[in-house]
Image 1 (cartoon, helix red, strand yellow):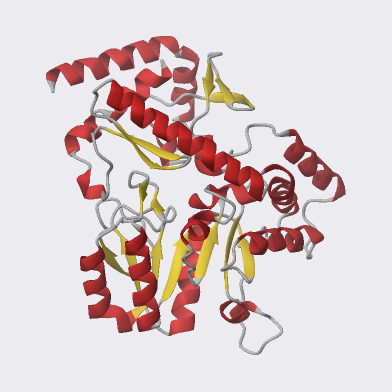
Image 2 (cartoon, one colour; image 1 turned 90 degrees about the vertical axis):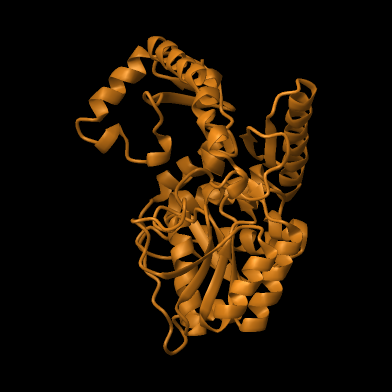
Length: 389
């Protein structure tokens, strides 16, 4: 461990020397922003790079270094930076008015594009982020079922106030959460059997993103589908990140239809948006033409720029065919990493599926977050810094 600590300190020193302008920008930002940032995931020691430009698959930092962007803003920058087709759609929207205070044709078109892609979606509603989409889906499930408990999974992330690193988080919404272990078929089935008549929803990412890009076992998802139907529980697929894997997300790949789906990130063409949807019967709760309808408000739910960018992104850039091609290419890339690590005989593994890749310091695929050892976690900052140098 002493040699590892020395290696990390050496990398930090070289990193600081190479990025003086980013370091100065971070110091200035700390005057007005706690810790110098307004988004925790973007912070890393000794300081994060400040980016000033992006073009195609590359970004440029304040010190003039160019990087290949493998993060892609966690799906939101899926189309590359400054995509001309999307840029043109945004400029057109800006020219015609961005805050109309009324329905526009863009939201209808984007809703249609989403429902055509996802067979489980008959109707959708838009909101401002993936976090908001998940909050609305969970709240909808509580209303529809008349129950309060929500089954979630350890290490899952469903937004800034619905996250479970190491269990519960102090900032979480005060819902009645029940925690289970991802990919634990027997344990989760037993837990649902115990509290199923109190559960409003089970929410799951088909690939556990923040927990290490761990794909759900097909049998695990099939069990959840069977058990939720048995107990009258709504099954929610959080496909905010995983929807990019193929034209209909992971649910389309596996042929497992949830009751509700949440979307975000790339569906707004790189601009803020989120969506939740499901069957017409469930979504009728929000039909203002019906008595007792739920009021779903939000000034920017249908903001013109996001809707226009999303329409261009899904109809012209990330078409169903392009989505399938991108999955094939990215899965081939992931497998090439796996083969390279094996050929070099290093204990590293490219976990995940398609473009959802996480490098784990292990020789075998990671099936559960608990499989990731503390020792492996300690190597992450060294790998990260060396990749930036």
